[in-house]
Image 1 (tube, rainbow, N blue to C red):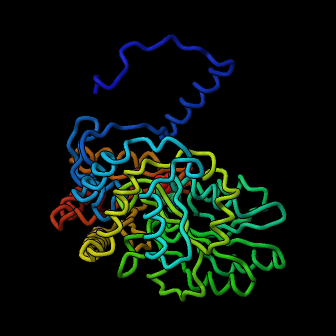
Image 2 (cartoon, rainbow, N blue to C red; image 1 turned 45 degrees about the vertical axis):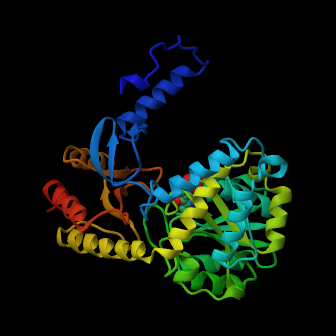
Image 3 (cartoon, rainbow, N blue to C red; image 1 turned 135 degrees about the vertical axis):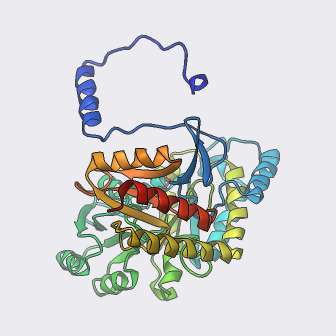
Length: 401
Ligand SMILES: *Cc1c(COP(=O)(O)O)cnc(C)c1O
């Protein structure tokens, strides 16, 4: 859309190594790994307008269809009227509004944890919790497929970081044996963001207990979606209160707003308030976002039908895709990747789908391992059975054997 492009572009100021950048970009493009922004106009939802074209989207993380819900809009606008827009400061100065406070309390109750601390994004929460808790001499053990922000948190920390093969209990056990006696944090996604599978939490917790390690789960894709009341992985697995892990939740996905939190015991949260740099040195999110998230939390808890609807759509999609011979992954969640393998083939299928009016994520290395490019199809409670049929028909005409 031309109106969004700046008409007066300044003359380039070359960095001394600009040629290198240009060559690297060209190489990336040739390899089919170039990343580009696309412009959406209008609300997030299953019907979106991207680069001026209306598309049926299977490509957002708005799993419950709450991002544009009227209750969230109302709560947001009402809070803006009372509190203005910018929070104006970090949480530890004057940025922590009554809405932030209310949201922390409501989330502590929701997650059944002692205390909750808000972060401005999930990325910051993961950096800040891992780096804020773990110091030199400690050990962090992570699943290889954990979200980039968790792995980055481990890299930022002075603690030693080890990784284990995805969801491999035997491999994890060997890692834990290496580090007995040290303060050790076992870190895993609750639901893996590019595969959609659920971490085997009970086994991880049992093993961690045997080795006196703590457990932290990033439930960005589990909260709101898993468990009868949307409490996420902990509810899905029915984890006993005495075994509950440190939980990271994000609001940009099922909650339909923005921001994140960590839920844990008092001393963990108090420690983070003292020494979590991505908490301390950043501006608090606008109070209105917290107000909208409070409204969202109500809907997440009350409207079971959204989770039930998702389950119906997930089985409809999986049954249909299997019948077409598509290679699905072991995912019971709204993240339903179709494995393609080759980067360029994945891009070409993505483009063909788009020509038929359907938008899916095309995920390539380094986001996923080499040779495992995939379509990342995500379902939302706002989709209908008819939408799934449309998607399956398009997939059949493009890539069924
Ligand atoms: C999206 C995501 C994050 C980052 O959360 P943001 O609030 O978007 O920064 C962290 N962890 C996982 C597993 C995610 O999927």
